[in-house]
Length: 328
Ligand code: GLV
Ligand code: GLV
Image (cartoon, rainbow, N blue to C red):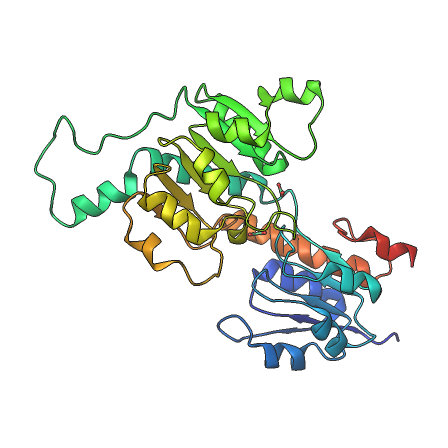
């Protein structure tokens, strides 16, 4: 009999995914309650055929070398894979996969919730009510910004941004997008969106929502220049990755009124958050929960597990992010 493949999962994920792995592999799931410390991760990956890490695990060349020649697949439990050194993996003949598509709508729901919470000051007014400050209806109590009829600027126009455009049409919004690649006219018509340069989009949008991956090129994509281009009444929504925004500059922008507010699911140095952000009433912050629905986290688990199994069976996993690896 062929030796069973040996797989390491860096943290407990929904059981459905583990079950798929267990059908054909020997599986160890870390029971460590937190992000695995580096030394433990280095030790645990040794001799594995496959690893299923989370976006909170940094998988670099050192980890790959600690795993050794047996390692064929790193099946990330996330759509974003900036935590993995894909170049180093390709060089070592290791496949890398992600979980695209299944979390698109769930993440757009959360981005939409942040947009609504910012504009109508939900969290701020709830704090007010909960702390006993409500004295009855007032003509000027917690006036906010209308979402309907406003202009939404989407930075990036991938799956999640498109899901945002669909939501926006139900609110009669004008939707603009900026992306490195302009899509065809047919798609622009389908989503009722208009292409703009980044500068024009920032200057004209009431809500700017970020939907680009984190890469070397998009680090601090939104910095002082960009925040200063935005309208004073505008809101910034980030459900993508924290380091896309220069968080220290964002704090200044919010304190000095360059923009009206921000809704943030992701932060530059997670789990740390700029202390000033936590003190500001015009900021809505949630702890990286974009894909956090029961259904979606389960789908992500089965998808990551199926990617891993396919790779170990010697077939091409459906969500391979480094197809160059096949040419080696
Ligand atoms: C979540 O942030 C993901 O990339 O899946
Ligand atoms: C990621 O960009 C997705 O939309 O799944």
